[in-house]
Image (cartoon, rainbow, N blue to C red; front, side, top):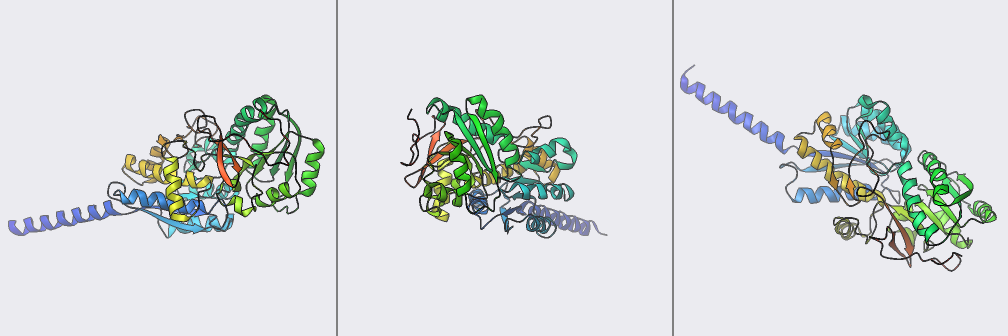
Length: 410
């Protein structure tokens, strides 16, 4: 082989190597999004994820790599979600999956994230068991991240707000818990039963109902018989039906707590404005500047999709951003490197400052709750609009109730 030929061969090999490296560098970062696309709350998940990806891509992506969102409608089914996860990883070669606001779905996907060694983040499921499983067997379940508040944190958020809004301002003393029977509400209700008495609300009754319930009249009649000052709710898969019947039956007791469907901007129209007066917890909300990123996001979402996002739209949007940040910091989409980078997340998103609990915390890989981190909000439907009523530093309105509600003024 002549020196000239060797030089030519070396130059060709180097050129091929550089071309291969450039091609790899340009490979997209693929994020699978498995969600309840037809559900009131779930529809915002793929929409918000795509919006975040478009924004990041418009600014050059992550070190020149574009973000590609691959969406799957799980039809609110755990079985369909598992099939979608398997397809996302094995066929579509996604690097990470954002999935579901339903706890049962995420709990079904968690073992598959472990088997297929693919990071998974939920934008809306709440069950304590999701992050407790990571704590119990970190090496197996480290692939799962809980990108929403746990049921325990949600209960605390509701109690923190109720102490100020209901006990201190409205002098309320008694409550009835009304929750749907689901995986996420079991620890939520345990949290309610623990924290409500501590803030001064005596629990008179605790009603758990099937999510298939269509007639809430007997339930509301039973609650009225107890004469509580407030109904503390834990509802997600239902929402329209109990709200419409609450108004039609003129139940003279306010509803306050978790009502996932109420977070969607179409809920007023969906209930024919029966939602007016409903007070619900959210991690962010329309017109509420939790951070400087909150309102620009909702404005951009409304401009693109014609409505404002539900609660898990905010989290899904933030998740795409801090996944991109983690990929940049890791310099890789390798699962183990991505997990290590995600564990170090410190990201100001639309819902506050996002950090994850570590290995030693019982809620490993769940987002942290507390002042300066994520505290949540209380919002109320007033005159067909969603308005923030707590905490005071971001609230735009005072509590306001329809005429059939009898409450003490502050």
